[in-house]
Image (tube, rainbow, N blue to C red; front, side, top):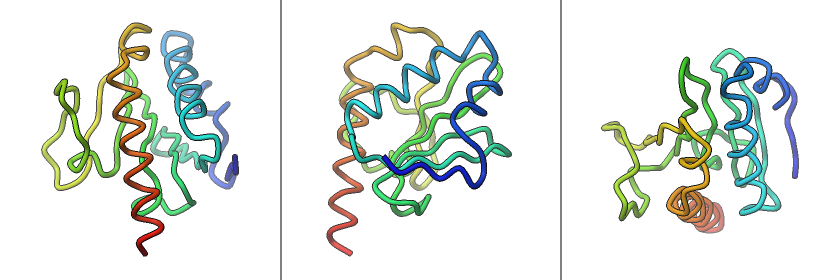
Length: 131
């Protein structure tokens, strides 16, 4: 798992999240790691996000990010508009980006979240090989 600490580390994200959201950030990162053993992680402290992909390029190779909000954690998908979402968890109206608000451990452990991540990972892998 390549980690780019140029902008910050995941530990910085955990500190920024504070005690109330820290465990959700860690649970989501663990989920990404369990689904994609070769993920590339880049942290942008200014945006308070940890981003995950099949390569280092944010908008073309990354599939998801963990973003800290005041009372929840966003699990964002860079190409979320193209994902299958049979349980209608994804929010957002932009051209590409979608997100899911994670407030509890139960929401982080929802099998539909893992399914979205699997789909996003596969989408980016296919895109990378097609280019």
